[in-house]
Length: 111
Length: 116
Image (cartoon, rainbow over all chains, first blue to last red; front, side, top):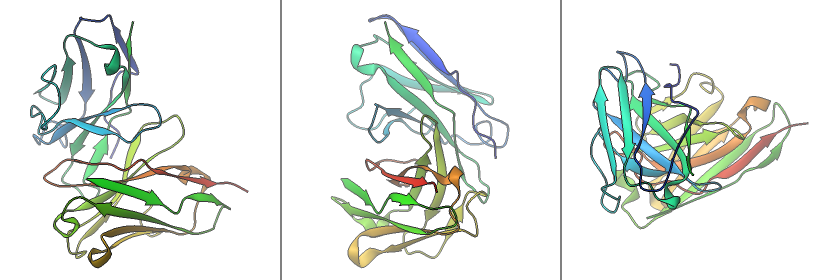
């Protein structure tokens, strides 16, 4: 199972919106609505930001939203803040004997 | 919720290591659990998971046959026995709750370095 494809980096200014894409295949992202997104600050464990494509866990800012079209999922962060600067990873269920795959990660820089 | 990994360290190629993850703040016995690793400067890679009662286990292909995931619900603990270690197994290993098709909570990780 190959890793999901994410852009290596994205950037934006405070207050702007950015979108991070996550491209898989018809066997993972395209076949299940079980895409989740994680935020990771340096030296820390990841934090769940979005699950089941569009849902936000309790306590996660409404500035974070998710969507999916075909084999590509997306994470949008609106009203960028300095604290959003981090690495972001997508993940999808695959339904195989190795049931989880992650994306390669995207480094978000807030200019 | 708190997950604390331990057991990492430096090991020679071909050697073994056993990682532990101690859980608190939730009902451990009702959650699937996973190990996820991150090589230095690289992305996340799912390694293995185990059902609530330990009756089902799944592994990524690169570790199947070398790593064994297990748990002891009486001690709220998750384990990863790693044998025949290779340089490419060098990574920070995280334990995470794996419930309802997502990884809700993560530990801070423990570093495993495979080198001679």
